[in-house]
Each structure stands twice: as structure tokens, then as C-alpha cells.
Image (cartoon, rainbow, N blue to C red; front, side):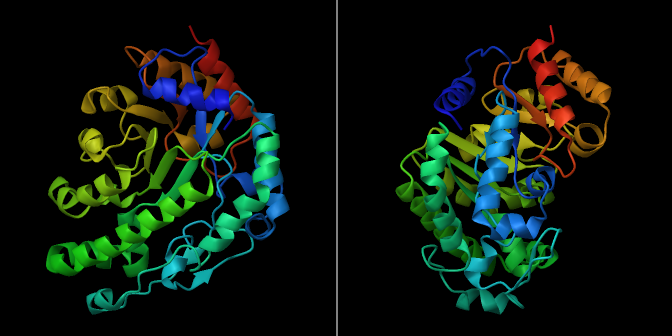
Length: 343
């Protein structure tokens, strides 16, 4: 993100009225490689292709804030790799990390990863180091420390069903797992921040929040998210595009000030649930409208989204969730123009 975009983002989070209306998207490997014209494996394994794809995005859509911006990642295998997870990388499909915890007894012997040397994390960080000079030459900065959230990582290490069952049946071991992962994430976030002083934001992505009730979230999620979001940064960003009616009212308590949701709840409802204390990034339907709709569909959805809001403070207009696969260039241009020109 440029300095101007970063200042705009902070202004929106602070409740200031920004004109033209801001537009932003989370972009990563589900969309960017194929949009750029390469397969996903090439995007992961060739630093030049990764960098050029990101440059093409910011140059094609100069009026859009891309979050986190120059995201160095290996999909859902990123953090589990530090725990030794075996990973599959198809040529042009999403990678998959395999479980490392066969039973809850394994939790107590789980290693405490060192993000400086373990898994694919050193490659992620070094890619950014090698690209930093070129990124900054374009007027961009590395702004975010990025990680999957602790519940999300636990579900990959154990399996989602197994992790949810452990919450109910073996709470002590579940807390041990959450403490291990949270220590790891704090180290990983701190390493990113110390490597790039321009970082002033944290992005955590965790859809498992949407699969548990409020008592379970307050017990096994909230204290660990609070610990992670206690970092001294300006932007505390959460992505959860699973159901969020249970967790949305708790976002201020978590320490979140920017939230990307799905599209099952309207922005107007979320403003009410959060007391208009949280900046919302969303939320036209990503697949059926932004990716699969006609330009006219996208324009109509953008107008309806704006009209549904009593006022548009603390809103960055986007789709519900991250940018999905196969979104065409034209639809992004139409959405941006519609948001910025709508009465």
C-alpha cells in the first residue's frame, strides 16, 4: 500500500469521512495467479512471477487498496508447515496441509516452532526481503504482519471435527494447544514486524470462529485473540467469512478495528452489532456477483450496498470475503467506479 492509501485506511478506521468512497480487496493465491495468467504452483515457486503479479494488480487498479498487499504466502500450508505438516501442492489448485496430531495425547508433545527457521516461514520472509527494494521503488510499503488465526491453525493440525470435539471433551489439552499456537503466532508476528519496520498492521484470518458458539469462543478463542491483537499497531484486521452473528458483537472486545466478513449478514446489521466501532470491509457476494455476474450485476449490487446503509463511515467497499477465483478485470473496474460515483 502507498502512504496515501495507508493514511486513508487509518482515517476510515478513525471514523473520518473519506471521498471518494474507499474500495479495497483481500487478494492472494485463490485469485491473483490465474488472473495474471500463470498457474498457482508457478506463483508460489517463482519470486519474480509473484512480484510481477502483484505489481500488475496495483497498476491495473490504482484506486483500489489491496490488503494486506504483496502477501507472501503458501496458502493454508503456510503456518502448519512450521509444525511439520506434510503439504500437497497441485499444479493449479489450492494446496493442502495434512494433520500432525493423531490424538489429543500428541498435543502435549507438540514442538514449539521457531518461525525464523521452521517450515516455509523463512522462505516467506526472505521473498519479501528480496523484493523490498523493488516494492518501495514503486511507492509501496510492506504494511501488515499476516498469519492464519489460532483456531484456524489448530483445525489444520488436528482436523476440524477433531478440534471441535476436543473443545467439548478435553478442554485442558485444547487450551494447551491454543497456548502453543498463540506463542508461535506472537513470535511469527514479532519477527515480521522486526524485519520490516514499515509494518503497522496485523491481519489474522480465522474462519473457525464461525463454527463455534459464544461460550466456546469466549473460552477457547477470545483470550488468545486478545493476546495477539494487543500488539502496538494501528490496524488490527480480522478476516472471517464464515457465519459471524455470534462473534461480531465481540469484535471490539477482541481488539479488532477492521473486519472482513462473508455476505450472510448485511453491513447495516454489522454496524448495529458492533456499535459502529469497527470498520467493515465488504460485502457484495464474491462468487455469484463479483466473479460470476455481469458488469450490470456488479454495478447494481454496489448501488444497493450503498443504499442499504444509513451512512457510510467506517466502511471500505469490497466483496464478502477475499477476492474469489475468476473475478474478471472489468468487474473490478465497474465495482470501483460504481462505488465512487453512486449518489
